[in-house]
Each structure stands twice: as C-alpha cells, then as structure tokens.
Length: 217
Image (cartoon, rainbow, N blue to C red):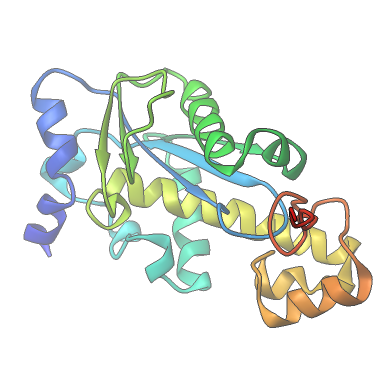
C-alpha cells in the first residue's frame, strides 16, 4: 500500500521538491451529459502526505469513476472536513455551454475553481490534455485521476457535487429521471425528451436537442 501511495504522489512530489508547496489537482464532471452544468473542482493536498501517506480515512482514494457512489460520498465528506485540504468547486451552466461550447465551458470552470482556492495554487495538475487558457502553470496528465491523488480528490469533489445537483433537478423535473442518469443520454432520458421536450437545464447545442440543419440541395 505504501508503494502505491508513493506512486500516486509522484508528480506532486517532484513539484514539492522544487519548492512549490501549493500544487492543485483539477478535474471536471459532466462534459458528456445532455443536461445540467459542467462542474470542475480543484484540491490542494498537504506535502506532508508524501511521507506519511494518505490518512486512513482516505485509503482507496481513486478516480471517481472507479468508486461506488457510497465510497465517493465517504471521501467527499473527509476531503471537505480536513482543514489541511484546500478545495474549491465551480460550474458553468447549460446556457453558457450552448453559447461557448463544452470544451471552453470546461476550461472556464477549471480556471474558476483554481482561482477560488485560498491561497491560490502555484501549479496545477490537470486531468487530460493541456489547457491553453489555464491561468496557472500546469502539468497535464492523461488519465491523471488514476495517477495523482490530487486529481483523484478533485474528481471526487466534482462528481459528488454534480450528482447532488442532479438529485435536486429530479425534484423539479421528475419526469426526466435525473436522479438515475444524472443528465446523460440514456435510453430512459432520450425517451423522456421525446415525450416532454427539453426542460430549462437541457443543453440545446447537444444532439439530439440541437435543431437539424436543413440539407443543402
């Protein structure tokens, strides 16, 4: 377990060793759904954990997609309660996603989450590809949420935040089943859209909601 923990602090440790102490992992949830915002989270873990390892309450922390909903909720509760963990969350709603596209909206949410950290980060570990518009020095890690504890923490924070929002959407628009599919394009969701049309949080720029362009003759 100690060796695995060291490996998942590999990128943080390199930056900490260079004198940077505020290294933030950043990740998003909700790029693919047909409804709701894209949510980004940023988390700064303490450098001391490189030596001591994760607290016992965070053992098993990983990419949020690899965790059960119950485990995500457990880790969320721990991460948001520990005073030595700095975190922030930001989102971009469906209306703005339709205006600027999902990629730009995702990057805007990431920038906002990082900017809300107090103190602000000196470097960001980004899940996926480099973000040209990021206003912080960065290291991009493909599949970073399974390679870095900081990014894994951010992925849990973003995913749980968005899933909790989906529960609220369900109370407002129960006919769509948001509590089950979280806005993703499941057969149940697509059928609900066919029956009821879109609701205020649907992304009009996403197929099948996007109006079909007339064919040019």
